[in-house]
Image (cartoon, rainbow, N blue to C red; front, top):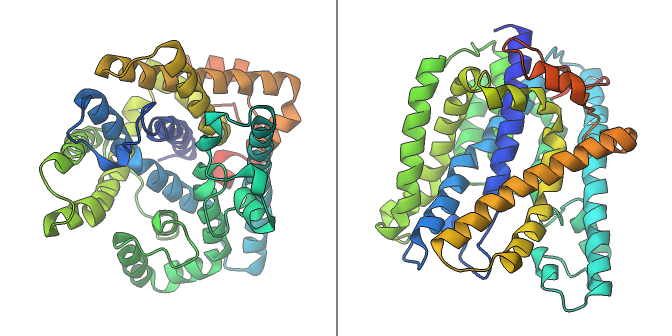
Length: 397
């Protein structure tokens, strides 16, 4: 695989899987407290419940794939010196930490404004922080996520990524000296969901390590052919469907249920990683795939803005198009996702036009040439020119 092919595949997968997170982070239906994480159950809206949970489980592989890509790119051109790691630390401060702080601060200020202007607003329940009672500890948590998720809860991923980068010298040493000892040890912790106290979840650590191994041990990145990728994706989709339906037939408190809903579900993510990676060359050369590939640079921005934006849109649609049946809920579901994506892209385009430096900061140092991206999306062999500045996807991850 050439660097060009790798760059295009990474651009495609990054944005595709962030779009997947928009599905995953839809949450419960308006007026319901049933979490889609529970899967299918005996409800008055079985079709809508299945669809919501199905897409949630399907895109559980998003964080593993993105973490593996980050690990692979992090160790690109690696040399085991302090200078190498210091350079990577400085890069992540600008491309991850500072944008995360800015986004979280914006959301805190936004909800302070909502509390002041509309004290009884139900919108305040979207976040888990009481903005009228923020102390030093809760403010730090809201901005960085020290002992609980940041106010933008999807930034738990960035929190864990930053911690993984901090211990990267140890990970690099393990990969070079005892790669499979590290893989088995970290993999076992991931399988039993042990978070090493400092992480929110072990997913980022394990798949970052796996991506680092792929880079430093020179694994063949074409280990799954496009044809086999389609087969794996078909198997993955069927298993996700069965996993979604399982709670209706297999109790959670039994031996089988404890395995299926814990380690069994986590193991499905490994299959998802192989399936998405293998399918990418076919998907990215479709009409929509070329457009996703060309706009890969907007992935970080979309990850940052889609929540709580989607929650505002979901609640607004529920008021405009009320209803509690399958059809009404599915309309709300897909309309929320579509409008969230459209609004996020519109804001990104406006910001790159009128406030390009602010957009670059909020997107981790990335910039977008929309005209060039549009032209690139029309060519099957195009390399996306949409990423500007020093931080390219292959160089920085």
